[in-house]
Amino acid sequence: MMHIQEEHKERHVLSLTVANEAGILARIAGMFTARGYNIDSLTVADITDDHAISRITIVTSGPPKVIDQIIAQLDRLVPVHKVTDLTDNGPYVERELALVKVAGTGDDRIEALRIADVFRAKVVDTTIESFIFELTGPTEKIDTFVGLMRQLGLVEVGRTGVVGLIRGKEAV
Image (cartoon, rainbow, N blue to C red; front, side, top):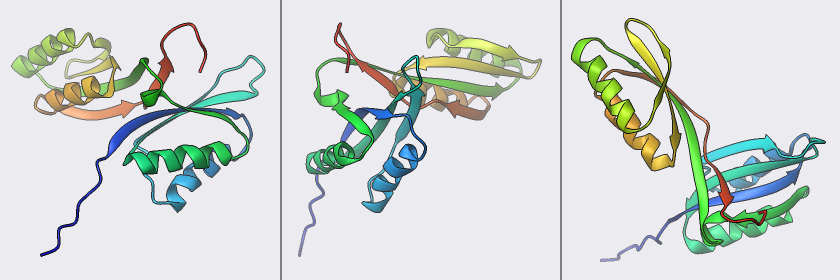
């Protein structure tokens, strides 16, 4: 009998600085699609006063060889200035923001507020029958909060995706 051994997958947070030009996001997404790589999270924001440079943060998973290939291929794309693997580059801070809508009354409503307090989620909108909570933190924290709210009347979730920066005084 033949056993197929699956390679160990690792989660990596990649930070790219790119020239802020039309089509760059499509080219990066196309590179992932063409090679069958998955993007778990993607965020983009311009980071300079003159709007010339943007930071793209991509969360992806794969065996170490695949992650190395992704980084090498991203590095070759013009107008990518720099690719940094935050996961391999020492300590870094990673955050995500979520808006979580929960509908409920009575005990479920009280429990939703209690859990939100434990997770330091902020109520940003409320009606007699629902709340919208704002929550920031690592992906795992958001996932856990959403899972708990599923049991209490989760209606919908909006998430920003991951952003991350290397700790310390140096820029990425």
